[in-house]
Image 1 (cartoon, helix red, strand yellow):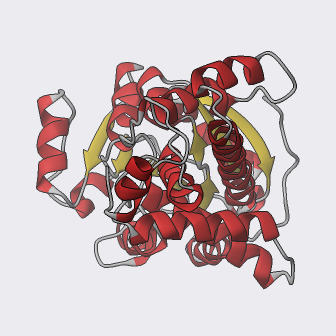
Image 2: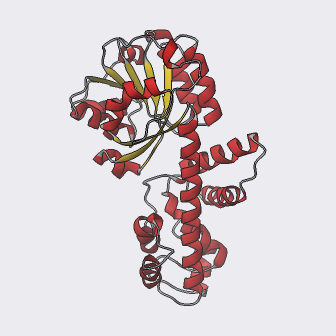
Length: 333
């Protein structure tokens, strides 16, 4: 892990009050948040959790976690607050809304937002918190549910050196942390990650589409590509699901669309084109138009099947009337 120098952000070390001993509050107990919270508790760190969903709270309670009845109760006395939420509006509500961090937490509290949201929104939220002498670390993650469960997430953390030092013991229970710069930088790096992954998925889909058109078995093509310069994490982990026709969600299409929009919008705010990200975003929107928003992001393969009238999923067929009928009528979707 690398260390970054202190920044001149208004929540800088010289303005952050000394920490008050207290538990960690964890807000957001979805498919990622719950195992992340479990790993914090397993490390012996005092923890209280909360989610707006009563079902999520019940699952956490069943797994032995201390669950608060309200957000304000979860935040009471907390020295560190960790959020893992769907999008910017939910993060804003927890930080700035009634019974939220700004209303309930003492000066010197450090908030670690591990959600994936807009870098620009993150910087605005950090400024709001800094006005009350609270610090924000943006620490989005990569690694999916498997990484969350095993405590092997890749954590991209932005914030002041002091704030990061305070929360590092908590972050280390969930994965490996790279300090990437001042607050907001974590979200920028996560946006870069999502662009790179989405384009790698698209590249695999295009390779399988071309191979399938000419009768090359996808399993054989994958094995050949893994042995050369085209080898990638996507070919290793997601391609088998593409070939098996397994669209089950690890990371949902709807979230991929959200993350790609963040990347494209952030670039547009700087006057920068992202033609690759913009193009693959359109393909994921096509998937959503076919009702695939809850499918895993490897389901982009189905979009290519519809466009090229081939079948990637086994048993592989090239362009036949049977495949045409499946595509025209919605088939597996």
